[in-house]
Image (cartoon, rainbow, N blue to C red; front, side, top):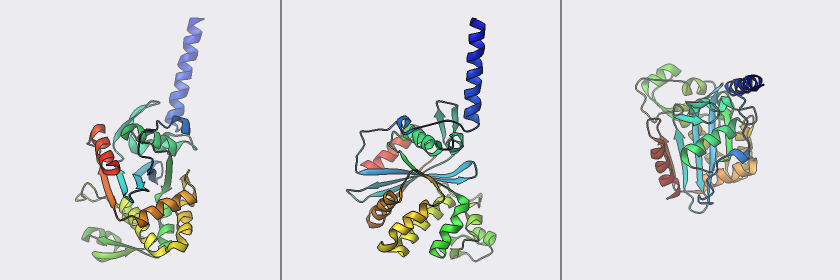
Length: 261
C-alpha cells in the first residue's frame, strides 16, 4: 500500500512539474503577495512588452495622484527570480510559465516578491502591435546613431520611425549599446509622450482604449485614462533602471526611495 501511495505521489509531482514547464501555473488575485503598508496615493501598473513567448521589456509605471510624481521603472529581464512552483528562472521567462489567464498576474506576483510591492494590475502587449500604435500618431520621432540609421536605411540624428520600420528598430542589438539602452522601452515611452501631446483632453479616452486593444490586461479604459491623465499633468517625471547584477535588496531600496520618498 505504501508503495502505491508513493508511486501516486511521484506521479502527481511529475504532473505538476510538467504543467509548470508547459506554462500552466495558475495565479489569482488572492495569491498576489501584496504589501498593504505602502502609500495608497501611489498606483503601480506592470507593463510587459512580449516578443513571442519571451518578455522583451518589463516596466512598472508608478503614479502618485497626490504629488503628481510619475516614475517609469525598467527591470532587466535576465534578472534571476525564484518561483515557488519551478525554482530559479529569468524574469523574462515568467510570463510564459503562467496559465493563459494567469500570466500577467504571475509576473506581478513575482515582481511583488522581488520589490516588496502591491502590483495587481498589468498590461502585456506583443511587439508586433507597435506598428499599429505608431500609425495612430503618424510617425514616431526619435534620434538614431549612425549604425541604427544604416540598418534602417536612413540618416543619423533626428529621425522618424514609421510603422514599417519600428519593429526593425526595437530588435536592433549593438555591441556599443549602453546598459540603459532598451529600444522597446524607448519606443514605448516615446509613444506615450507623443500620444499624449497629440491627443488633447477630448481624445484621451480614445487613446487609452487604443493602448488596451489587443492586449492581455486586467486594466480597464477608465483606469488607463486616469493613469495617462496623471502622467500628462505631473511635472515630476522620472525614469529608474534596475539592473540584473543588483541584489534584491539594492533593487528594493532603489525603487522605494525613488517612488515613495
